Image (tube, rainbow, N blue to C red; front, side, top):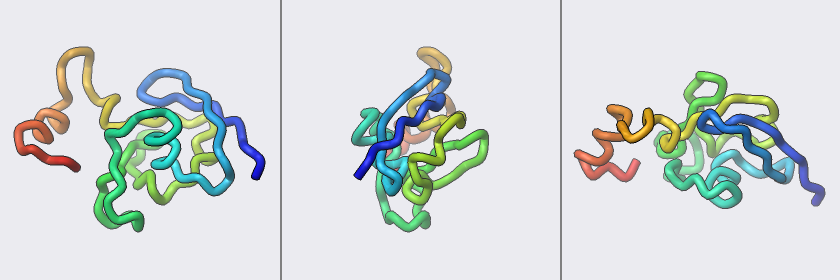
Length: 100
């Protein structure tokens, strides 16, 4: 199966990767780019464990195909902090021992 070259922005940084036409964003984030904050819970978009923002819109990364990221802006849970200061959502995950 041929690979597609995708250029995008992830957590404010330019990113490039190769993927197949059928790979999900979740798969690419975790297995290709090493961003493991988004988790696979249900695989059907019901649980929200894989949530990211895509051009400012909250989506389930298990339901979006990786080629759809071409030219888009993505933010994962890792990208929510401001320097050393955790985003309130990240802080609550820690306080409540939430694993997403």
